[in-house]
Image (tube, rainbow, N blue to C red; front, side, top):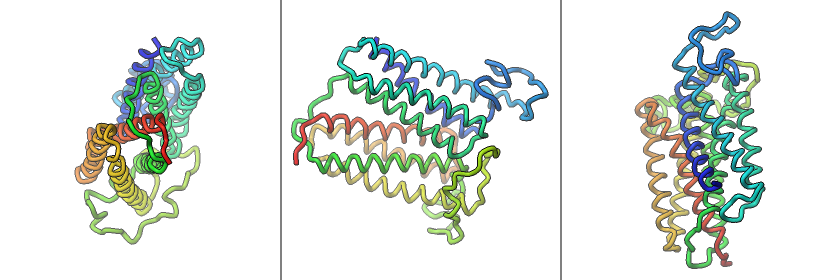
Length: 322
């Protein structure tokens, strides 16, 4: 039961992250201006009362509500995981700490979902909400790995290689933040359809980095963004530089881990996902953010993170060499 619930929850978490990306990219984050209902109803209404200033867009409202329904089911499934762990209904020994952290995280994630609406898609809150989804999926994936026998590497793992994996994973997480910030500030197309240049230049001169990562006031409607073009361009360019750094870092890690033959399958998965992510990033720019490619760019970022987490799970459960 514990394993089945983890499997279901992990699939649900992936679905919720993808739905969240789709909802954001379809500009449906405020499809329902209230929370947890939609114009005061549990289902999207056909007509709304005069107390709501925002007009009803049924298509956007349903996108938002489907995301909420899926997230609610995920929250209930994580509660079941917690209860099963408390009562020791697990196939393999599992500390209560991780299920507890997961339950607290999903509760905070629900609050972020509410604030996303009440604070009118504030970029900082929406980015934190994205991080919460990624973190929830990562913890579920770690639980998933804990309950399955992992193949042995067959040789001690060097400490410096473990440290390198930690650094590369941290860089990827920071790049995911940069991507979330780019998306929530509507800066994905601030360089036009130019690649590798930006607005026809390798490094535009009038970029505004000073205000690029300013938190911003609460109580302001951030739908479609409020930043100047120069600021959005700066955000986009930082994200591009980050992509180069992360790509080089992951390639270096994979080259180093070739010393462990039993990790080659993991390395192939990482390289495949990295290639897909780079290609999707370029497609999003030159094709002006097609919906499928934009959603998949978000999803593949998560899969790439999980591929590094899988490596970490194997490497940190092995003997360490100096």
